[in-house]
Length: 295
Image: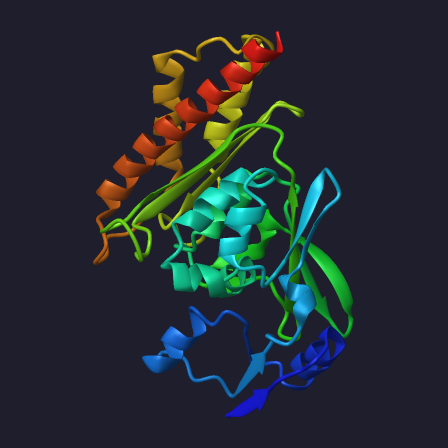
C-alpha cells in the first residue's frame, strides 16, 4: 500500500491525479474503522492532514465556506449561529474524540445514507454546493446532485472535496436523530428541517431511510403552499394540528427504508413522521417568537 503525504493542496491534487484509487484521509474516523475490520484495503492512502487550508472556514455574511476538514467540535463552537442545523447534527456525531477529528468532508466522501451531516446540508437549501477540485480545475456540485447511490457520490476519480458552501441561516433550523442508544451510535433514521423566510421556502433532509440522503419534496411543497396562502410568513400565527400532521405523513411517505439490525422499515417511517412534526413545531414556535418580538 502506498502512503502519500502532500504538504500543499496542489501536491494533493497531483497525487490524486497520479493515484486515482488513493483513499483520502483526514479525520480518519470512518476510514480507519473500515481498514481495521478489513472492509476496505485501498491501493494507496492520501493523507491530507498537512493541508491546513482544509481546516479553515470563512463567512461573507451570506454564505459559509466550510473547509472539508473543519472538525465537528469547531462547527459546534464556532458556527452554531450561521449554521444552526449543521451544528445540532454535529452534536450527535460519535464521541468527543471523534468530533475533534471528523469533519463534513469525510461524511460527504463516504456518502453513507446514515451520515449525520447530510440531512442538515439538504435542509439548509438548494444553494448548498460541494466544492470539488482536481488538476483539471474546480467545480461546484449542487448538494441535490452529489449523492448518487448507497455510499456513492458524484466525484470523479481524480477529484477531492475542498469545501462546502452553505447559506447562512435566515430562519430557525433543527435536527433530530433516532439511535439504538443515546451516544456513539449510527442513526436508525434522522431528519433535518429549516425555515427560509427570505425566499419563502422550507428545507428537509432525510437520513438513514433511503439508499441516499434525500429531501421530502412533496412535504416541502405542501408546507410552502400553506405558509404562502395563509400569510403565515408575515403573521407567524399557529400552523394548526392538521398542517403539522399532514407534513409528518408526507415526510414519512418520502422515505424508502429497509429492515436491518438497527431497525425495521416501519419503525423508521413512523419515527420520521414524529421527528418531522416535532422539528417543524420547534422551528415554527421559534419563528413566531421572532415575528412577535419584531412587531
